[in-house]
Image (tube, rainbow, N blue to C red; front, side, top):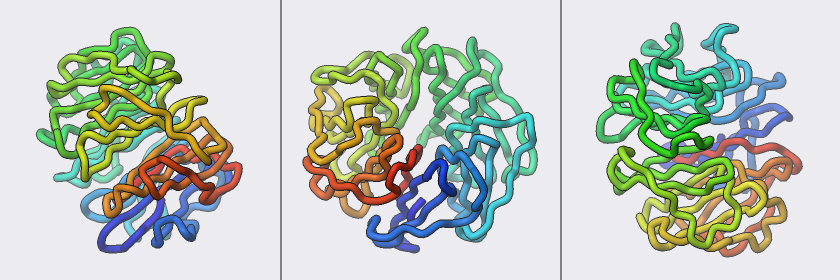
Length: 302
């Protein structure tokens, strides 16, 4: 995780297996470790509106209330292999953990957690989205499609991409009815009706396992995806077609992507065993940035 400016933007990267969480306050020029120094397989970081930091880890969910200087584990042995953690923007004590064993929810800052898997055919959930229009409305990426909950996770029903492994799902920050999902072996799917229906959108895509999706917040038509073996692809037409952007990117297994909110030309890509790469021209060219040989599972910016 990285802080570009304590009042403006944060960029986060998780380095596995070295020591976990790193922070940068200068757009990735330097990185500093934060918090836990044990072997922590950190998959993703998110911050709540109250300033608390949450880590999704192999051994559970960690939370920090002092800017990442220290963390405490909030989960017990029942909750492991947490792949994503998502926090309610309006209720920062409410968070959802997407895990290999389904969805878990806390309403008290991690003091207690409840399993919320009613309706899933296969409870392996790799990502979850809290709808920005209605926080009790959730979309989940599962091993057999996309699932929807309209009651804060109490019940789920499958709404698309049936039978396919969905690895990531994201909501557009500007066009809030627009969602994209990345799959294992089946490329990118789009929903233009709030997640109710889904269609493949793979024109130009040659690598069909998609781990990450990132938006240019200044231009709703520009979208990036990170793939297994194909590096980064960019769309300039709202996801209708894709162009591969890999010049200088010498590791093509991209697990995480982020576009800086303060500078939409600047991107970071986290790779598997290749560290972090940086682009300053919208993905046209890449240079190695940091964390050599690291597995960078998550990037986060604010």
